[in-house]
Image 1 (cartoon, helix red, strand yellow):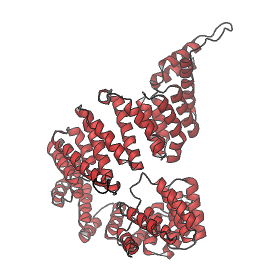
Image 2 (cartoon, helix red, strand yellow):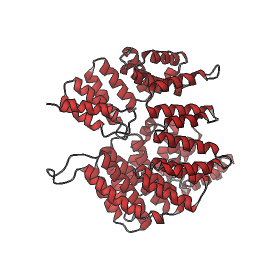
Image 3 (cartoon, one colour):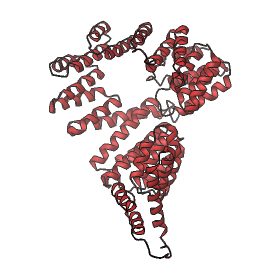
Image 4 (cartoon, helix red, strand yellow):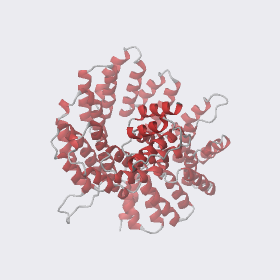
Length: 545
């Protein structure tokens, strides 16, 4: 009786696993024959559904994450339309290594079942999360998209899956730096007239063109007669965004938040500001006024901030929020003395400390940062282990100030508290030791340990390359740096990686390749650790006859 009840409950919850499997299992268990009889023969499809249900029950009962992942994949192999296993897989995959355990298998199942869009969306997401080479899954994603004759007419759930596949396809094309395939596909999608569908595709296209307007190839085509990918993308981006901008006035109120985020993401803060002002005009809540203030800061419309701060400061429970808005605005304007005064008025010590660090970072005052972090370290409660975040910030400051004494002190502190066993801590200490050219053998061991935990972490690979570079092992350094570049294809913070590659190639006497790497580095301005001025100087030296 317990088994039958359990199966009934499971089928009620699991919905997506075929009801036929539940009925077969329930019928089989409902009656106990008085004498042995020949087992009923099930069709291949029914056997698969029964197997899917058994695997699902085993997976949900298992405490082993790897076993659960493997079993949920097998459920989908036997019942590709099942919905709950997909959600379980998404919940279990936390790292790139997790994604790699399931990505290829899910891709194979999706390829065999192209009409299951939800399954295809999951497979694509796992392939991207696993950082597989785009060529391994781009073809399958495109075949599945092309197999949908009229995506605008899909049911809402399937349409959501279609959008997810388009998102994966677009992201993988960005990673592969394949501009022309992507822009042609999205242009064909924009030819569909259904307004809601076209609006979503328009945002995908704008995002795609924005990316390539910054990171596309700069080489002109047809002997200079045709625009480079970067130039073409820039023109197409402005054209498409103008169309999107014209629709802002009719954007539904409940979509304005997403629209504001979208505009900020594609570098259009003025448009985002106008949408935020409309949001406040139609719904004048403290939350929306706060949103408007931060968008105004992004748009450098600083004159709009003080009235909002004044209004919020008069509301119960909003005084602290108004203070934070004001401080952020002052920091963005470079009014550091006034910001420091207002930071001192904050009542919460942690907030004061964090904003002082933000102030020193904005001023690029590394000595001030070092002193502030040292003061914060003193405030730890007795018996509390070292604050790892604070320690790693001090390691970063030690790099910028070339302070070997500070690095050695924090290194010892992390070893004494066993926090050096954290991959992040091991990598940070090892990398800065290499940068300061000290204790290189120990640095190599630390970064090796970090790589054991996360073998395809591009920051860790870059660190190992830099350790090898300092040790004079240039060929090995180049190997690790190439691996770091491959692992960082999805990132836009690659400036330091390319700069390091240039330094290694230059040390090998490969001047033209080094110059190409330095020029590539200059495209990645979002990398906070990257110094474009220094790289421009390296380019100038190599460009001299």
